[in-house]
Structure formats: structure tokens, C-alpha cells
Image (cartoon, rainbow, N blue to C red; front, side, top):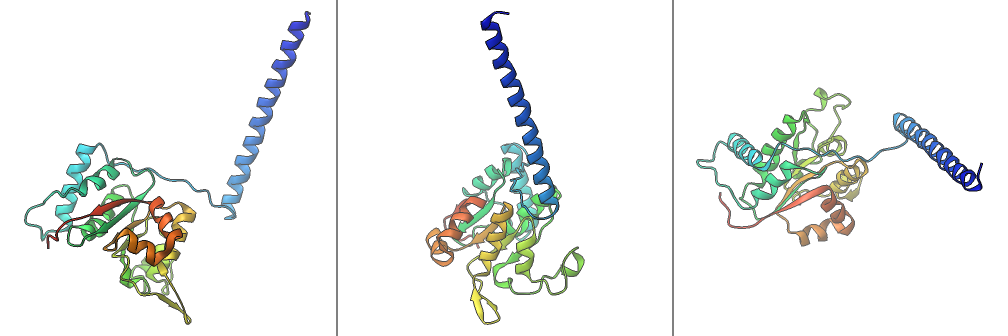
Length: 236
């Protein structure tokens, strides 16, 4: 056999055995991760992209749900900021929504009405919680598997896969045996750990959110949510 042929054969064998060895290691790593997850010693962060269709369909769907969850509206009016939510509906990219800005333009209707219906269409059931009621008992605790009668709304928000908080910024500090802290930080810490989409409405500006909750929390908030700014006169 010629020298050049032997060199090619040795090179081929090295590549073959290297590929096989790598594949074996990858399978072992995958099995190890699966066992660690099963033993609850590891959390695998994995975003889940949702979509309700193309843009035209999502626009009609948004309008229909909005009208049905707020029957006080005489005539539905499509506001410019709704376009950002409709775009999000076409592909969530694993993120929730941060609806912030001026009041009276439909933020709470969207967050506590439209979003839960959209998630229910994907068999993701969740309950919107008002920020002022974080420390109150979770009303559905006894009807929810894994929850006890002492579960608070704050506890629920740290455990649900789709936390929804309406009017963030009005909540008082949580008092835990004399130690006061921002309850919302618990929610966002859990959401960040498990890479959960977060749904927030607030009348605070970006600057006010940054001042109250800090740079670290604000940075996480913008990673877990798609920001949509509401700007203009109140329609109430």
C-alpha cells in the first residue's frame, strides 16, 4: 500500500473514532441531565414559543376577545399600541408582555382579559393577580393541586408557569416577620430561573420602574417581557 494511502486511512480512522467518541459523550451528558432534572437537582431553561396565527388572523382574534371581555365598550377602537401586542401574538419568542404608560387605554383589559383567554386557547390556564393583593390568600388554592389553604397570591405567582400582575407599582412592601421587601422581586426571580414568560401592566414609566425595583430586576423584566408603551389621552 502506498504511503499516501496509509496516511489517508489513518486520518480517516482518527476522524471516525473521534466522531463516535463525541457522540457517546453527548449521549452520556444528555442522560445525566435527564436524571438531574428528574431528581429536581437541575432546572433546564427552555423558552416556549407560542403563536395564534398570522398577523391578519391575530388582529381579528385580538379585536374579538377584547370586545367580549369588556362588554362596556360601545364601539371597539384599534389603538396604535395594540399593534405591538398583535405582533407578539404571531410569535411570542418565549416572552410575555410589559404593558406600561398612560392609564385608560386598555392595559388592564388586555392583561386580565385578553391574555388569559389567549393562553387558555393553548391550554395554559392562569389567573391574573392585582398588585395590591399580593399578600392576600390565593382564592383558588384549595381547588389547585399542590396548593394549600395558606397559599398567598405571591406564592402562586412564584409557582405558576404564566404569572400575570396587573397594575405593578401600587403594591406595598411585603412584611415578613418585621422584614420588608419587594414581593415582585420574588416573582421575577422565579420567572428568570425557569425562563417563564411574565405578564405585567403598570402606569409607571421605565424610569420609575428602574428606580423602584432596581437595575437588576429591570434588566430581567425586559428579557422576560416584550415592552409595549401606551401613550395618549385616557379613553375612560
